[in-house]
Length: 176
Ligand code: IMP
Ligand code: MG
Image (cartoon, rainbow, N blue to C red):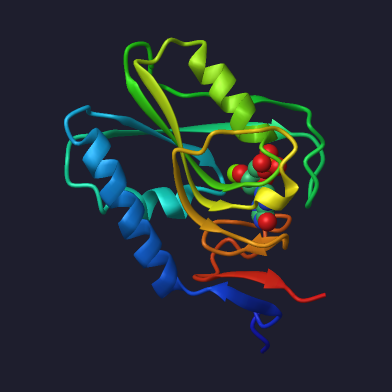
C-alpha cells in the first residue's frame, strides 16, 4: 500500500525542527524563567510545536489553548474570524505567550493579539515556528520566530491541508 505522504517534498527535517525549537526555548527561558507564563497554543496547527517547546522549558509555566473559526477551508484565509474555543484561564495580570505554527497573512495573529490584549495581561508576546513574510497583509510584531519559509503551502508537524498530513513528522510541501 502506498504511503499517504509519498507526495510530500520535505522542506525542513524533524532534526532541523528540533534544533530550532531548542533555540527558541533558550530565548523563552531567558525572558520567562521567573514569570510563570501562560503559553497559549492556537489550535490545531500548533499542537505538536507547543508539545515539543514546553518539554524544553524547565521552569514553572501553564498551558492553555484557543481555537478560531476562519471561514473558508483550504489554503486561503478569507479574513472573517472569531473565537470558537476560548481560553479556560483568566489572563488579567498574567504573562501570556501566544504560540503559533505559522504566520502567513498575519490576519490570525493580529486578531488574536487584539482579543487577548483587551483582557489586560501583564505582557503579551508572539512566538511562531514559521514565518512566511512574502504573503503578509497585516503587519505583526513577532517576538520569537523560528524559521522563515518560502511562499509554499506547507504541511506536517501539526500543519494540515484540509485536515490531512498533520502527523507527518517533518515539514514539507505538496508537489503539484
Ligand atoms: P494567517 O492568518 O494568514 O497568518 O494564517 C494563519 C493560519 O493559517 C496559521 O496558523 C495556519 O493554521 C494556517 N496556515 C497558513 N499558512 C499555512 C501553510 O502553509 N500550511 C498550513 N497552514 C497554514
Ligand atoms: Mg494556526
